[in-house]
Image (tube, one colour):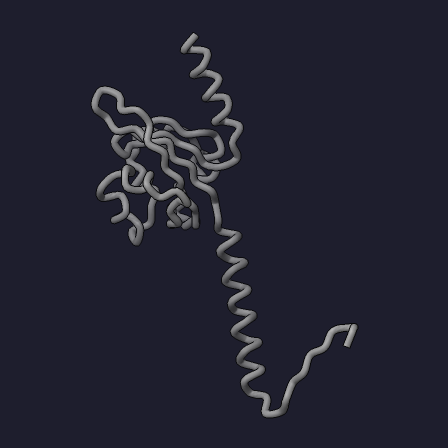
Length: 150
């Protein structure tokens, strides 16, 4: 029965559109197909058995110095930049959940949501606001805006 439950869990994890993986002592031991695609890895074997820190930009690698345990205490996730197999940078929100240890090895379920588009949209909005403020600051006359109701 336990074997069927594990297969059921694997099937459910494969359905998730986000990057989901399981680490033992910081090493990736399982990854869903979405994760392989997101990392732009040609095969799953290029990911399995590698430390998670291999897929994190140098600016964020220090977060992993004490393992994934500290990140599991962040209920809203941890924003960071990951590296794909093709050395592209991805902005992600990393959500970590501690699992039961096996043979003394710390295990964690990790979900990464690609937030690159959200970050770019936020930057574009800030840029437009900055341009608009710069234009308004150069106008030496009053500007009044009204809607269709006056």
